[in-house]
Every structure is written in structure tokens, then in C-alpha cells.
Image 1 (cartoon, protein in one colour):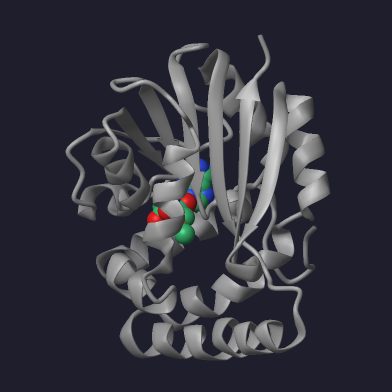
Image 2 (cartoon, rainbow, N blue to C red):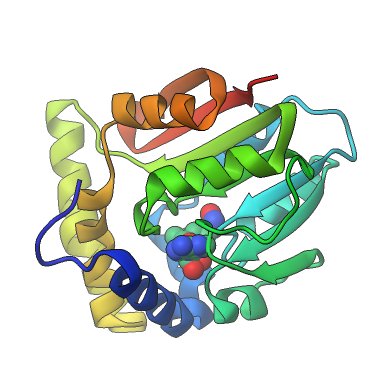
Length: 230
Ligand SMILES: C[S@@+](CC[C@H](N)C(=O)[O-])C[C@H]1O[C@@H](n2cnc3c(N)ncnc32)[C@H](O)[C@@H]1O
């Protein structure tokens, strides 16, 4: 799950916060280039899969500049954005409540939300089980969870093209237009991510049931959808 040269614990949290504070000004623009705009489609689907009635209250964890949070609003839900990085929240075009917080210790009351979402941040938290436990705590019984995270295609040619893009092109674009170290960290940070079966087990341990895992676009991205136990 971890790599020796990558930071852990509080060192990781500090490094990740400093990195996102630094790349915040160009994050959205570069994200669109690096995902070729496909992330918008994946977020639409992840929000639709919550299957919640309009005006349900959703916490978007690690909301960053608010791409996921705005999709929640577009689909008629009420959203609260929370993120570790002050700059990501400040620069985002948010029209929602914004709360700076670490996902491993959410400052919200138990069962306050109808659902939790989180996009492309699981590999960044210092303690993934604690993060899932917190997500479970703040969602009401029967409430919903929808997570997106990077993945790696399993098919031969697709996997090779993805590797060149993610490991070579993405760091190069990042170095040219933003922060070299941050965008070198991005592909390396996938080493923090457990495999999908382990993530499903961790979600079950946190109190989520009917956890559904699916790969999107041949494994470019992955999604977990679940329901909080009653
Ligand atoms: C790749 S960005 C994704 C932002 C947004 N969810 C999206 O889909 O565009 C990862 C975000 O996770 C946030 N993050 C990293 N570690 C965190 C933590 N421990 N608690 C809360 N947010 C965290 C970062 O500050 C950053 O905004």
C-alpha cells in the first residue's frame, strides 16, 4: 500500500496540503487537459448513482476546487464542500458552504448527511480506514456513498498507452505549467492505493453495505457506490 520514499502519517498530510495549496491556481485547467475532459462524465454518473431525492444534503469530501460539488448542485442536491487545502477551497468557484478539514477527522455531527461523495482523493489521505469510518459516521443510516479514484487499465495496449500518458506526459505537462514536484508525485501516489477488494473490505468494516465496484472506460477510473447500514 505504501512506498518507502513516499511520506506517511502526519508528514504525508503536511506534504499533501502544501502540494495542493501550491497547485490550486491551475488545478482545474490542468485536470481537464490531463483527463481529456472525461472526468466530467464520470462525476455525472457518480452523482446520478447516489439515487437520492432532490434537495438531499451531501458532503463532498476532499472537494478541492469543487468540480464534484458543482455536479451535485446541477443534479438538484444540496452540497457542502470540505477539503484539507485552504487554497483549493478558496480558488474554487464554490457557491456552497466550504469547510477546511482533514477527512480523517470530519467536524460534522453524526448522521448529518444523506450521502458522502469523494473524487480522486483516497490515495492522498494519511489513514484510509479512518477516512471511511468518518464518512460512515456522518452519513445517516440508509444514506449513500459514491467514490471515484484513478485506476489502471488491465488490457495490454490500453494499459501501455495509459502508462505513457500518466507516468510521462502528465508529469511533463505539470512541470511546464504548474509545480514539477507535485505532478511527479501524482503517478507515484497510486502506490498508496489498496486494490479494489481491500477497499471494499475497508468500506464494509466502516459500516457500508452493498458495495459496488466498477471500472470506468476500461479501467481509466474506478467507482465505489455503497449504502450505509441501518
Ligand atoms: C485530486 S484532488 C480532487 C479534488 C476534487 N475532489 C475533484 O474531484 O476534482 C484531491 C483533493 O484531496 C484533498 N485532500 C488530500 N488529502 C486530504 C485529507 N486528508 N482530507 C481532506 N482533503 C484532502 C486535496 O487538498 C485535494 O483538493
